[in-house]
Length: 228
Image (cartoon, rainbow, N blue to C red):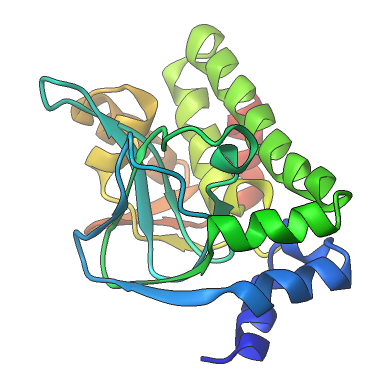
């Protein structure tokens, strides 16, 4: 896959499509393609910074595991999601694990190459700050929901976030390859509670449940459920 094909895929994302053309060109000019096998880690918590990434194909699991082996699943990300920008700002180690769910193709802009671009054109820092602030905004919303909203609203909101690419794509997905235990882990709910809530949405004609997948039947009613 060449840089032009990368561009056409990534342009489906709001953040990349809104970048100055010169910055888009710089990112792709310094980028290299990475392939991960199912279960292979891109990096782990505590690893040194290694650059900015975008998902081109497949799904990446962003999580953290404590000393007792319990996992906190933050998100499952797909094309055209960009990540890894925090370490550009502070130069500190990675905050979470990133692991391929299945075969995964990524674009990597190495840390030092990107820092040189930013030294040459400092105004690009604002574009990266916008990427980080978008995620920070979603994090605050999730914290608020976790504290104040009933489980049914939290579940509907998280489904909506996933189908809308965490706010970075205008083309909503219809079918999510999302096991219920993963959705439960994202919401800090039990598998049984998550299954019961999903069955309620299915009974209302909002979703259809399949093996390892959730199909969105009525996106508008899902939005209403997420705002209840």
